[in-house]
Structure formats: structure tokens, C-alpha cells
Length: 377
Ligand code: GLU
Image 1 (spheres, rainbow, N blue to C red):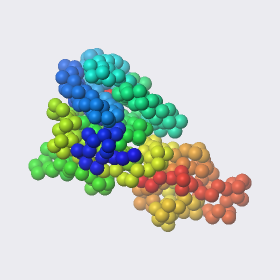
Image 2: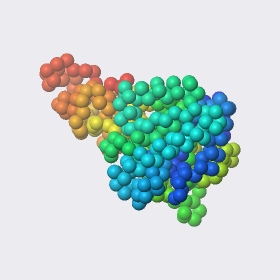
Image 3: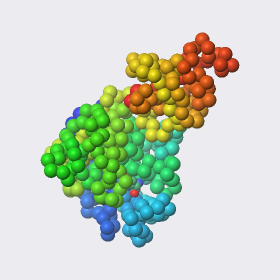
Image 4: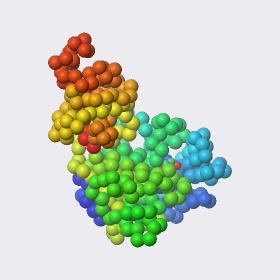
């Protein structure tokens, strides 16, 4: 698989055979309803991408904002979870109808998928989503995806469609994600400050880059903000997928971003195997394993995590659950699948393999997390 190395390559089917386009709430919905003319223009761009030979997946926000307007709910429908869920139920049906109608005008079939966090965190369900997406794209349909907001509660929500888009891209083995938002991209300081400069390309998400983001959604309609966009870039990057942020506050926003190069492109790291990408992109982990500096260095060299280098276990996880691995300063350096449940891991903390059979009462495994079940972040 390939990933575009510039914004211009987002429209090149050879460099970007499969593109996920995420559209933010403020672009789709205004106070008085959907921004139909704008969506029509975007759909024309999406149809053109397909005509060039690109597969297209849409991640569409806007259900809550649209439904809130129709139900007369204040705070854009985000005053309470019940409001958001009711608003989403009303908004989603209208939104999918609109996407289906406008894509059909270009002879394209739309396919709705509503996902929750668990659909992508649980390996079996993730593979189901992957298979459905693959089949839909094979059949020539354009999947239009949103979070299943009317049933998802706090614990099982993504909460923002930026990370959802990155996870969907991973599941669909896409080459790139374009996040259309109400900002041009990532600025080196708050865009309202004088002298703020747009970053055209980001190679790797350093702490300095994170410091440039601010967690507040400008429009008040969506829930993303720059922080969730950087998290999305991280998830995509780990899976070898390019991600760009560009403004949708213009007609033909894809052309503006790709032809004029206005946006921020996050270049991916090397593409990993699909399974490791899934593991690295997991958002909800069942526990954590703290390790000493020697073990952290050994993991960096590609070793398994041995009990000897483990200093503490947190959380209640079962064998096979995904856990975070933390170095002494507290930074999460890897995700992996635990070879033991939390109780047995705790009993093995700091032990050498020769002592483990006596402690466990059964033949120990070779590691706390095996290198094949581990991905460095
Ligand atoms: N799923 C939400 C909606 O359709 C949008 C989430 C977001 O703002 O990113 O309203």
C-alpha cells in the first residue's frame, strides 16, 4: 500500500487509491439547517475523485447539530447525553438521506454505516467492519459513516469523528484521510494571534506539535478541536496513512487543499502490518504495565517484555487484553497483548523466568508481552 507524500498526491489515484474524507459539523449544518449547496459542491468533488479511480469513504458529522435544530434543543444538542442522542437520531436520518440523494445524482450509491468505539476496538468486530467496507468499495458504493450517537454512551463513544475517521481509514486500508474543518490546518500558535503561521507539513508528533494544538472546537458545533485531530494524525501515522487537515470554508475544498497546497499534512511513519496498526491505534486499554529503563530500551531493540523489567501492574485485565506499556517517566511507549491476567502479572513483577513456575504453579510463558503482540508507539 502507498500513502501520498504531498497534498497534491491526495488526488492521484496511484499515490492515493483510497481516500477517507471527514466533514465537520460546522461545514454541513448552519443555524437554519443543512448547507445543501456546499454539500452538493463537495459531492461533485467526491464523484470526480471516483471518476479518477479513487475509492472514497465519507465520515460525516453533523447529526447532532442538525437534529438539535429540528428538535429545538439548546447548546447545539450537546447539553446532555440524552439531548445529544435524541438530536442524533433525528439528524442522522436526514443527513444520510441527503448524502444518498446527492451522491445518486452522480450515479453513485451511498451506504450508511454507524459505528461505536467497540466496533473498532474488539478485534473480531473490527475485522467485520473491515470486511463490510471492503465489500462496499468493491461494489462501487461510497460508505458514509458516522458514530452511532443515538445509542453510544460515554464509555463506548469516540466522541469525535476525527479519531473515528482515522480508525475507519485503518480498517479500510486507506491511503489517506482528509479532515475538512473550519480551520486551514495546524498553526504554530493560536490562529487568532498575530504572526501565527500555518504548518504545511508535520513529520512526527512531537510534544512541541501537541503544544500548538488547543482543545477547543472553534465553531461550538462539533466536538473535535485540534487535539482530537492530532490524535487522529497519530492513529493514522502509526498505520502508515497520511492525514491532512484543510479548511472546508470554501467551495471545492478538496481542490483548494490539493491544488493550492493550503492545509497541514501529517506524514505517516513506516506502514506496519494490519494487525499491529490495529493494536497501536487502540483507544481503550484494559490496564498498564510499568517497566524499568532497561526493559524500555530492550523493547526499543525489538525484544519481548520480560517480567524481570516490570515494576508495576495497573488495571484489571485478562490474558489477551490490550495493555499500555509505560517507561519510568510515565510515557506510554508501546501497546501489547498481555500473556497473563493482571493477577498473575502482578505475582511475576520483577521475577526471573527460573522462579516463575514455582510462583504460578504452572509452566510460565516466555514473556509478559511477546514481541509479536507488541507495537512501539
Ligand atoms: N458524531 C457527531 C455528529 O454526527 C459529530 C462528532 C464530531 O463533532 O466530531 O453530530
